[in-house]
Length: 415
Image (cartoon, rainbow, N blue to C red):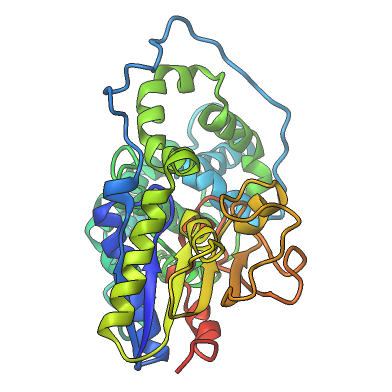
């Protein structure tokens, strides 16, 4: 039986590793029943932490704002999803502003006594949204529905309040169904990931996301899944993204302590690996040794992000672990670090060792932390491209929820 050693990437701790491991076990199990998945969790022992409780983080002394002239592509759905990652209600607010502008602003239009406000019907429907009928028979869609179900009611209630507050009393306007559905979905995801984003980011395939949003849109009375109004939302998107991302913004200064502490697992693991990476490589070596000892088949290393860097470094060492027949890196920066001459065991210009195993490198073009290797190591790396249909950074964390990944890997894994 083939053993696949699953090596996680940066920022992963026990709870999130178990979730990712379950996705890999389920995904590989659907396409190759003869695969045994082996754990390799190094984050708890060798990951980064603030050992002095954040003593190095300066206290905020003043507020400075920063703006920008960035322009989002108004025809790009990913731009809208990137906006909703930051502010789930931004698109809905822009729709309300456009509705008010169409009637010339000012006071609400009002309706005759006894006539139901059409927006109240939409709000009532939003409060009762359900995903009970959405299923793919035990696959990644069911996992997403299970993650979102506890949060759908509160998310629908929040969107209903926003609709009543901003649109109540105004004349009907087309297109609210898909916009409200996206807002409910984005709020449910935000709640599932914790009030401060401290839970593991949901690994979501874009096709599953669109199926959920389509089901919510249908329940709201909409027939289509389009209706993006990114053009109307561009101004809000720029302001929201600047506030969220700019290190000079007032918001970033205000919450610098929380932002820094929250970023430590992801960014800190990378920095710590550069000078203390031997422990991570030793953990992978031990996992491979155990897989070889307990199994009677070939061993595959399946590694995400920083885990892929560590695997390349380990396999390029003079004494690599025996028994590894295939390396699969997913969303990895190893080829990029080689080009920078920043790998530990292999200098730029040096070829991969002759004993280095077959290497498959998986990347998504939307993942800014995923790189390609065929031109860096000609004849030694095979690049496989997937499309999770997610904006960055979610594209980096959604590989293992993407069904196509396992379909591509199934014929490549040794028997």
